[in-house]
Figure (cartoon, rainbow, N blue to C red):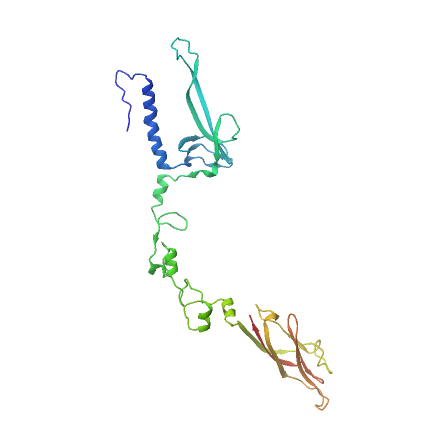
Length: 311
């Protein structure tokens, strides 16, 4: 590391001395910049309700101070050059004006303002974590804290009680689903479904349909008809009826079979040759309507029914 040596007799004020002072710090700063990274914030520059605090950043491999300013999207680099009078001719006139130093800083601003030499979007900067924060990352990671995490073994990935180790895609792929464990499962193809002897692969509704299978639901039961009336009403679907609706998840388009029969009928008067019994049904757009009774009835009839639905 270069170092200026000041003897008791003083230091000669030569151009070479100034060049040494500049290069001694410049080279070391450049080395630090490379270690920290480019286009980064490494101190301060925090937004507080529309005002961004001062701090330090590195842009285009140059360390620059940031001046507190109103928070915006565009950062500008402002350069102020100070001049001095020189006596280059050594005549004592000091009439040669030359730059003697420049000062540069960043702030939020308009690239069109005076003394602006560059601008860039604030979003291009990355905040560098301090060594203290980085040291904190050497502890176990949790749901609330960044940190170190150990890769799970396959045995650990296959269990459900490890909450500290991470699973890689490879380990996850090897965690096969079983009857007792959730995991990765492969879909069966059409030929495997048709063979019907695979116990490891999963089926989808579409694959089942492609293989000729259907998801089938059977509904059945007994029900009492409504709106009782007497007479020859075997074709009147507004009397002595019961409506049967599709089960949840199905529509009338899924109906493939239906049958209804008489469960109970109550006679009124004599049973003779003018009595008529009926049990008919009609498939409507949203339901099946069953009508059932006899010509001379003494109560609401009761039906049995069965319906087959397929998807």
